[in-house]
Image 1 (cartoon, helix red, strand yellow):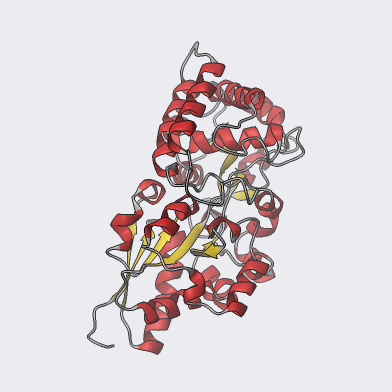
Image 2 (cartoon, helix red, strand yellow):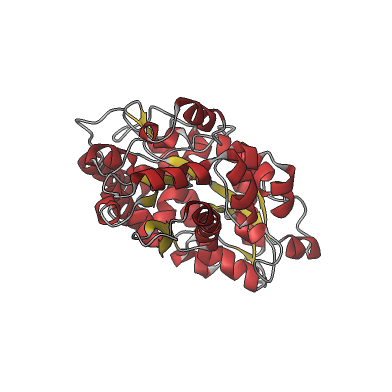
Length: 399
């Protein structure tokens, strides 16, 4: 190995993120003679931490796609076409899973490689389900509500990730389920009846589900679900293929599509991770070479998936061997991610999401609040924080 400073990357702190990056970096380092150091931050900081704090300290940064408008304006992130050729970029676009590739497109350029693809899906402890008399698994939100009522006092119950950030995402997912992809086309345009119905549905469900739901993110619920028998079924949370792998935890989860709504859409919000190259990197050539390796179809369907990753390239989602490793996770949830809704990507969303989430969380877990007032507050926040007078495109363009 050379004595030059290590190439530094910032991931987020879960085996799904760290393990495949470390495995590929170790292989790449042996070939190139360049040390790589991956640091990781908790999920909460991945969702909220300012890009400025990361791009100045790291060569490679994993980002959430709502940061893309900020990234494009900031000058902190190199456009992908500056370090991959046209054929590579075309392959990435052609093999996008759902709108994953499009979520990193802004003003006609690409700002990150979609190395990890995810959305909200359903999950079940299949052993607990088979041991009970539950019939078919829920296909719609009325089915979910019925199951939650029936199991409210049972040893194994329904849960849903409804901490503030995930309450926001659940509100969007149910709204899309009810009204279709144009539920929220832009900041001040919202299907108000569907928004109110979404809020009320989630508040009613909150009275029936496992109490951990109130402050939980998907990792919290998945960990509890796999180490105890307290949670039978989750209708909506960001899917982690790690928990579908034998041996990852004491119990295995089976993932499936999100509930279907009257719109015909399985409402879900897009997640996933993009790999971006900092313009402040002093080792741009090496960082770019490692980024190309991580996002390549061979790595994505090979060492990345084998090391516990959740690939973003369709070659992995279509792979029989990758699906065999994960209890058919990718095939079972493909229909949902193909319809997934993108959150706003305009500058201002970083401030908007936690505030909107706190307002929705207060409504869902509160009493005697008016849904119309909650929607009005949501729109006031959108008007003040998501106004995008200078950037293009608007966040609905790729829906």
